[in-house]
Length: 369
Ligand SMILES: *Cc1c(COP(=O)(O)O)cnc(C)c1O
Image 1 (cartoon, rainbow, N blue to C red):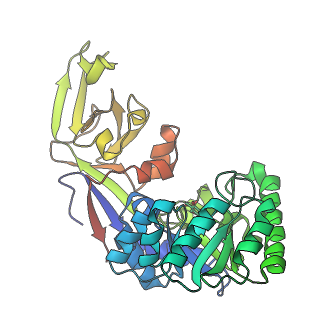
Image 2 (image 1 turned 180 degrees about the vertical axis):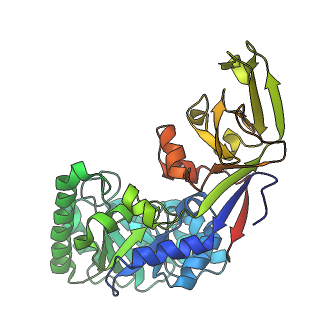
């Protein structure tokens, strides 16, 4: 593959396929798979990823907001799309684009029902989300009678599925809490069967849930980070392949005498002679200020080059004193041995934040289409 001559995010569709097949391999064949492609498919390229997942046979896709789903429909994606956090302002558009809402409280249900009525819908698929302990979105147990009253005999809507979301599926110290969430979800399912006289399909697990709680895979699972190559667990990470690699290039090299400073606010002052490289990537590209001042490194000629001084909007400076390199050489920001997960952890954050923050200014290059 060609060496980077500017800042690029490479998206490897063969790695995506590998991860999809790996995750599918952890499920019984009849269990459905939902690929989460919210936030530009975790910062990569939602249309490219959704098309590939559709070709691989994913049963569902999910986005967080309606606008994200509209982009996929405009690109010709026909797979069912679940919208995890729909807001009433976009309910009409949702119905026009066949996007399926996750309904999470009485007010949202009422508003969606009004939209479905006004557009003369019958059996429009909706998904009911229950709060089992995350305390973020979801109906409460006490809403069950309200749901029965609103939905029984209702021709406009059809409850396609019920779902909940785990708060700590990757955390072994929270196994008791997670098991209680699973129990609560079981109880909700039974009540739904009784009160709605329906058997909507069920889904609870995200990536770490798939791995750590196979007994709760139910009818479908929802995977995001795993598809992109991270399993929140070193053992699983070995089985997965990171889909994106962020690369850039050395634009200028400086030899700096002791006692000089580097970058804004003179955050780094040299004690000894240093050689630095300036790279065309900064916080406007998604490398936030938390990665500056020695917290992490990029890789040049296979060697670590620490980010020194403050991260600028469009640039960072790295220490290349002990690296034999030149202006124009390729730089791996993350990918290969220094994964997005490691890069993020160096600055006390998580791969999810680093990946989804890669800005739209960065050119995307699709590999292995
Ligand atoms: C984002 C999200 C997921 C995907 O989680 P991963 O940890 O990335 O697999 C699943 N379900 C819901 C409700 C989400 O918001």
